[in-house]
Image 1: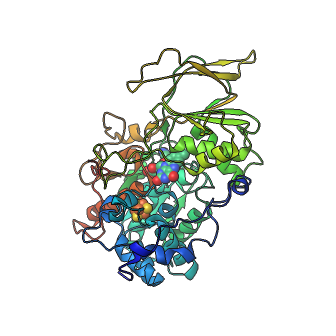
Image 2: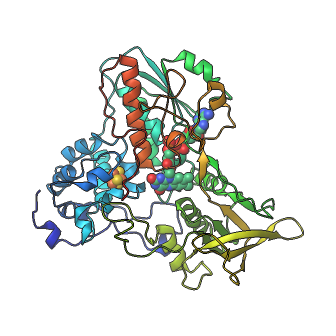
Image 3: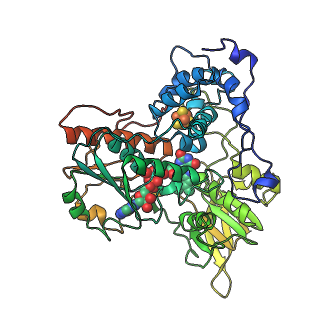
Amino acid sequence: MADPRGFLTTPRRDWPRRPVEERVRDWNEIHVPGALLPLVAPQAGRCMDCGVPFCHEACPLGNLIPEWNDLVSREDWRAAAERLHATNNFPEFTGRLCPAPCEAGCVLAINQPAVTIKNVECAVADRAWAEGFVPPVPPERLSGRTVAVVGSGPAGLAAAQQLTRAGHTVAVYERDDRIGGLMRYGIPEFKMEKRHVDRRVEQMRAEGTRFRTSTTVGRDVDAAELRARHDALVIATGATAWRELPVPGRELAGIHQAMEYLPLANRVCAGDLESSPLSAAGRHVVIVGGGDTGADCLGTAVREGAASVTQLDIHARPGAERDDDAEPWPTYPRLYRLSVAHEEARDLRTAPAADADARLFSASTLRFTGDADGRVRSLHLVEVDADRRPVAGTGRTLPADLVLLALGFSGPDRADGLIDRLGLALEPRGTIARDAGFATNVPGVFAAGDAARGQSLIVWAIAEGRAVAAAVDRHLTGGTARLPAPIGPYDRPMTA
Ligand SMILES: Cc1cc2nc3c(=O)[nH]c(=O)nc-3n(C[C@H](O)[C@H](O)[C@H](O)COP(=O)(O)OP(=O)(O)OC[C@H]3O[C@@H](n4cnc5c(N)ncnc54)[C@H](O)[C@@H]3O)c2cc1C
Ligand code: SF4
């Protein structure tokens, strides 16, 4: 602990964001480049190095937060990068995208603003790349065993990197034309620039991982043959089967799933398209669904120049303060939070809502109506109570000529036939079933990430990838536990 009084003398300071008017005119990340590094050593010095670091418990990866906070406060960046990478393959992803349950569990957060753990993580990761502290780590010798990983999201990539470094020959199969899963096609550029994914993929290639893009296992490659050709198979195909909104008018033109809309914006940023065929420019946009995917649609629609954007959340507006009885420290509470996109919509007043918050809470969609050409024009909604019963007299109509459905995902996509061809057993909720060792019912086939856990977070996906790699390595080497497994398949976020 470099500064025993740091938490008393140094107030919390976050990585400053670029002004709203500036950042919505481009797709770059929203933070001020270069503004984090000068802040971060004193911020890391706020860490109290408390006896029981709940932050470390709250992080699914078990990141050694107090250790790297101490090293950063002493400006020992090389050692900090080593400690960070000891538990996290891709800290530049989590440092940008993680909702930071660690900060909700920070002991300082009991009565003060938490340590800026996520910012420190991002700074260490970026500095490590800048200083050349993260060279490729090819294996010293090859095991002669081969593994196919299906899916190149954070779970598949973490599994592939761990297994390659352990000496196995790993090929990653990806149905999209680029590697990265939802981090590539889904999460907008303004949350994480894709160059970070490209850089890691290059590192992995240099270590020996092979990548086969534009290859759908189950359609372009037979899943059973793939299993037969390898010593083990890891299914990390994500949970991309989206939920529907079965209300009258759903068939009208102009109503799309969020995951039909967001990847097109990613493709514009990648230079594949001049403009998105579903662009929100000049349109009244309504996003149905109050979660993060909806917020990503909001930020994208604002950047595309929507005439107005409203986001509907069926849940009641949460409180601004933690409810100490229902969600006590150190759990991650449901709070009224203003995401980057909500801040932009509010400041630019693109939302028709009275308090300029783009969100309408307790809002349930009843139906859509369209024009003579079959295009959506209006969305009709009603306010609902806590049991989702309509409140009389609260019906209203919003102008809507682009509607985006962001209602979550029910489990892995089955259209490619992979699950059926392999004969994988499913859980009642549609995710891939597995035992305590991440093994499915088919010998030699393992499952990880959202495909098995259900829709989750990058940090859980990386933890899943590391844990499944440990299980596969044990399977291939006859039982010795050589790789770390931060979680078990049934572990869940901390609750009261
Ligand atoms: C819009 C959006 C925004 C999000 N934002 C955040 C965020 O800010 N922070 C956060 O922590 N989490 C976020 N998430 C959640 C996070 O992205 C996921 O939890 C995480 O990506 C899951 O990782 P995964 O590796 O299990 O699956 P995925 O990332 O879904 O990757 C699965 C991959 O498998 C491929 N695939 C599927 N079937 C086949 C097949 N048959 N053959 C070959 N390849 C196949 C898919 O194309 C995909 O590339 C977001 C999710 C969405 C949808
Ligand atoms: S990965 Fe997430 S939970 Fe873990 S230290 Fe980083 S920000 Fe915190």
